[in-house]
Length: 202
Length: 202
Length: 202
Image 1: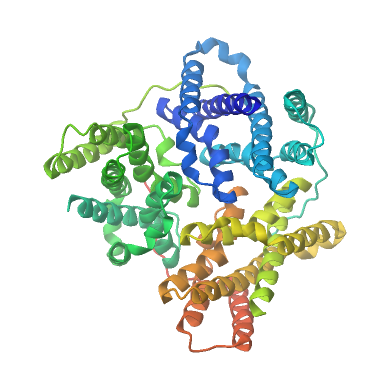
Image 2: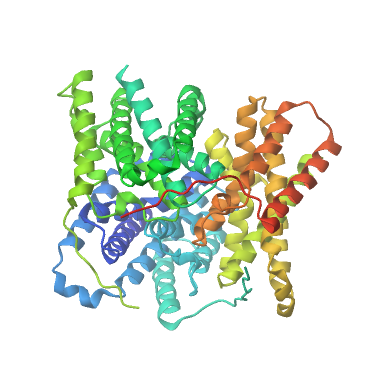
């Protein structure tokens, strides 16, 4: 049950996040659909390829596919003059997708009885993978590599789920809200990890 | 028979299209070969990975590989002073490759008795995939996401073939010429789908 | 034995090369780890995907993973004021990784009794793949497609190993040093293959 909820939330949130980036970059209608779909399903595809699961399971998610198409269509049709207020919605939808898919990916790995390191990796790949594909196709620096804390939140979700101390749907929903809020705060408050610059001379 | 013809046309056209982009970006001889080969075989590789077919079938296309190498070599050796007139050949070769591979990918999916949605997806992935890889490696915005109608033509080919109403090689050749011409017209006449811009503030 | 040595050298060299690029681009600590790991393991992943080997073998290299993490950590902690002298270390570590992984990939293909063309392809994919992923994620033009001779050296290593005339660890170590030195010279002395420019008008 919780699994389906997180799949649905993640798919719709990332589909809209991809559509937003496509519209910011002035892609046409078809480009909006392509980037929305790629963002919604890219994380799962990357996880399946790298973990060695059959990628073709992607094509059995017909219901998710229809929800993604519906979400993109509704978003595209929303009246233009509302868009002024949407400038941060790209980050909000991305944060929701990151959180939902990180949890879904971790649950998947726990279900396969993988070790905790693999659970963390699955959380990061599933949560962040769609955004990486979206940003590469749009010619942007991947959000996962920008300054504010991002993938660490996905890794934390994977760690907490991989411990298998806390269980039950209530814990998962609480985790989902926490990770989403923490990611949005990272962006709005500019939380970042330490960094060190090397000067590039050539 | 038609299958082999479309494979050959698509491979040669995309190989030259990759070589053109590489030469526009001032890559050296080896870079011209790499980008040509990646463009010619990238679409099929992406389709196989995402549809769950063995990617290693790529390596059985020895004859296609030799044709691609030959096409790149001939193109590279053509006297320099003719290049002035080539400025739109990059688009023309890309359009030919798109059309040939969209039809070939759709035929492949029909042969596997996949549903019509999968036939359309296979047409888009096979037709547009090589160009996406080419443009990402060259640091360009993927042509599939630029303004003039592009992937819609591949999807249309997939739809018409997936209907399985029209059959026979003659229909396929007619479709190939039509899709190629429609794509070239989209570019030269600037046909585009509706788009909506969101202003990106940050 | 030699196989393990080349795996270790390549993994550590590419992990540091990825960390250097991440620090040049001002990524944070987690970004440095991600780009280091992706660079160290990306070449092997691409090779396995394209040659049709199970990608999941990646996850059995626990020891290599720990060495990569250790190398990145040590590199990150090195005092800042030494960095002035590091400006070319990015190229040196990349050259070491290219050479070690090209040889390792070629050995792998020979072990699988693949034909010599496949040995050369495996050498190029394994040697250059990690750097391509690194550069795409960092928004740079892939080093393999820049001006100074790069992938040709990996191909040469594949060719010499694929001939199976020379054998023994001593030959492999000699080859490793030669390829590394030749690649570094290509960069410092600006050796390049012929190129031809097409002027891009639009």
